[in-house]
Structure formats: structure tokens, C-alpha cells
Image 1 (cartoon, rainbow, N blue to C red):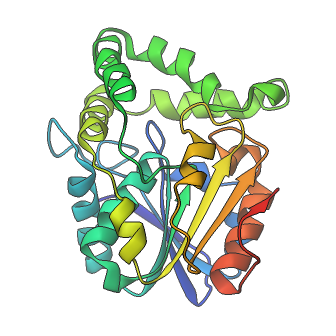
Image 2: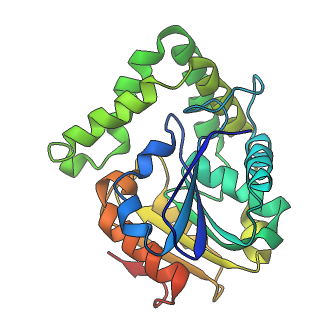
Length: 260
């Protein structure tokens, strides 16, 4: 079973999945802004945080399966699911197999599209660097995930992200990269998913092609998208705005496709 923490006492249950080289502590700035409305179930994905490593390749389907096992053990169903980056890929895999369990699906600076050939090759090349010098890989890569326009302001949070990344076992990082290479396009899921879908994206996201993703979203009334003035890490860069959108969107309704 995966490691998890529960916070808040709201009626609505919100399961939160962190991204690559992260763990469940990344939600610390958003948590106080969400805990009145939601009961938060923050999960460490396989090979990250305090959760075990299960295989040499952690596919998104395997991660989703472990998330379901954990939630089943807690008798949790009929909940909102949110995933950041790799956590969003896992959330999509979960929704594909278990749509009846979900009230909503939030892609938090993530993508429903599969990696293109260039991105897959980039991931393959990173495997050798990670294996040979993971600390250097993490320290060099983490700053690029934040908006380059506010690096000075975000310096403390960038250091925090590095510290979290450096606690992640190298084997867990490698298994995740191999799993992300294998992930498939989930456009069809967005067409068929019956619940609400919320997409938060960053104008300056160097890891995800935000504008391309937003352009390719299906034109459906149950899908809402938001483009924020930040990079890949809205939970650290714009925690108040992100929490406000989640609170309002998952509990009420907002006009479609807003820019913040």
C-alpha cells in the first residue's frame, strides 16, 4: 500500500497526486486554503516519498492500480482526483479504469497527450544522467520548472523543490521515467469521461506545452481550463489562485476557460 496523509474535514474528498521527483508534502501551501471545504487524501506515488518501489518500470497504470488499492483500503469512493504533472498522468490512467469512482478529474499542470518522439528521446537520454549523477540532474533541472520571470522571488521554493527531489530514491526516479516513456494518449478518455474535468496550465511551463494542450481540449461543457501566469509548479508559484480555482470549480461553477 502507498503512504498517504489525510488533512481537513470537509464533506468533499479530494485525492491529490504529486508529480515526478516530488512527494505529498508539496501541497503544504495550498492545504490550508482547501482544508475547510475538502478532506484531502495526499498520496506518495510508487518510488516517491515514503511509498515503496514495486518494479523497474512504474507505468502510469501500475501507479494508478496502487492508488486504487490504497483508496480501497480506506473505503474511499465518489471523490475528486487531482494530479500534478506525472500525478496527472496517473490520474488519467485511474480515470480510464475507474470512472465511476470519480466526481471530477483535475489535470494540474499536466497533459492528456502522449509524449512526442522528441520528448521520449529526451527522457531516454535522462536515464543515463540520473543513474550516473542524480543529484546533479535534480539540481540542474528543478529551476527550469519554475517561471523564469520570477526566479529571484521563487528562490526559496526552488530550493525546497530541490530538497524534496533529492530525498527521492534513484531507483524510484528511473522507474518513473521509464513509465512516463510508455504512457499513451488519453484524448479519448476526455471525450468519454462523464464527470467534470478541470485543467490548470502555466503560460511559462517549460515541461508541458500548455497552449497546445488547451487548443486540443475537447469542446465539452464539462471541461474547464485556466491559464495562469506561472511555470510548471502552480502549487508553489500561485498557491492562492490555484486553491481558489479548485475550491470554486469543484464545488460550484465558473465561466469556461479563464485566464489569470
